[in-house]
Image (cartoon, rainbow, N blue to C red):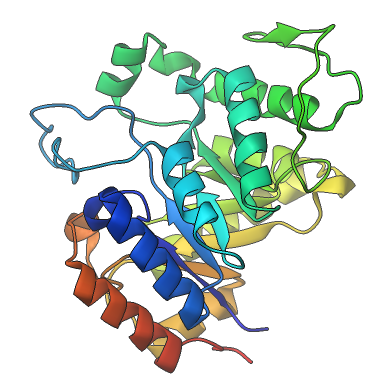
Length: 295
């Protein structure tokens, strides 16, 4: 089966400029890319902590705003959040925003979420970092209730509601696919029990192999609800990219590679803004040389 190719950073770096985001999105769609992925930090620590790869001055459009923009200027490419830091969001508000976005996108939305990890970001929003895992699970269930239940009701540790409703619903029922990011045992359990897909960001082949082992172990330990279907595997690779490397990801069972604007960027450069003309050339190179790998 052929790998699907997505493009990361459609809302930040060079694409933090709305006009550039639209230009890149249309180019990627015309080149045959399957999806466009955003990133998210609501705030960034300033100064940046030692070893943190993102400059505090990086332009970063809000995920829902940025994806709505590119959805309105495209027609076939899927749009995806990669990822929304879910514990920092109100899930009732976010469910409404994402359902509205999915309507604009005519059902093309993929909801990528993760627990987050930046202490300064949690402090700024007023959410305890220690609660991030429990909030993530709670909020996924709450959003699904609002998207799919005829009379939405949910009672959880951090969010509860009943006697309410919210329209329009997402185009795809019972809601857009949810993809969970992050590694580790908790993320693997979350992927198996709550999500349609798993997203590994900034992983080389070996790290991808390790995390897929964790997912297989979790699949043997936890029951997967049948309505979630087969777990789809998405990875943003780092480092050298060529046909041999792409084939290695495919052999591991990866379904989609979401490429950086500079596809062969290393770990330290994965958030460095790339000039728009180079992004467009990289899109064309991938479409010409790598698309269709595994046919």
